[in-house]
Length: 109
Length: 114
Image (cartoon, rainbow over all chains, first blue to last red; front, side, top):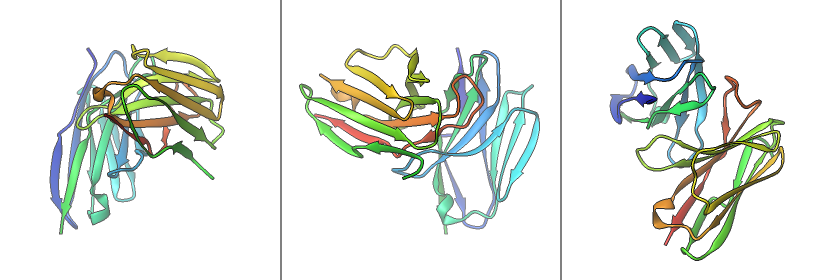
C-alpha cells in the first residue's frame, strides 16, 4: 500500500531550527510537496521537490532523497507565526497525491 | 475576490437534512477537488473534476453528491449524513489534473452532523 509517515507533533523554541521528517512509500513517484496549515485555515503550498537535494526558500528549506524515500522540511529562525501543521504529500505514478497526517509544530517563546 | 472561496464556513445539520457546500475558484484553473479532513488523519480525496468532468471518485458514500456546473464552481450536496461525517471539508483547485501542480485550497467548511 501507499503510505506517508511524519511525526504527529513537535515542539521548538522561537529563534531555533527545527527539522520535520517525512518518509513515503508510493507506487511510482513524481515529486513531494510540503504544505503549511494554520489552525482553522487552508493549507498553503510551501515547496515541491522532485530531484534529490536541498531547495532553499528563505527561512524554509526542503530536502529529498528518492533512493531513501525520505524528505524533510527545515525551518530556521523560528517565529511564533510558524506554529502550524505541516503536511507532507507524495505524488504517485498516477499523479495522485498521497497525504501524511501532518505534523503539528508548537513554537515556544 | 481572489483565490478559492468556500461557503458556508460552518454548518450544523441533522442526519435527515439536505444541504450543499459551495466552492468557487478565481484562478482560471481546470481541476477542482473535494477533500475531507478529520483530526489527526491524512487528507482524504473525495472527488476530482477536470474541465467539469469527474475523473475520480474514491469510494465515497452516495450521501455525498458532487456537482461541477463549470470550471469555476464546485458543489458538494449532502443528504442523510452520519455523525462520523463531521469534519472539515476542503475544496482545492490546480492548473491541471494529473500533473505536478500545486493545489490551492479554500478555507474549508466545518461540518457538524448531529
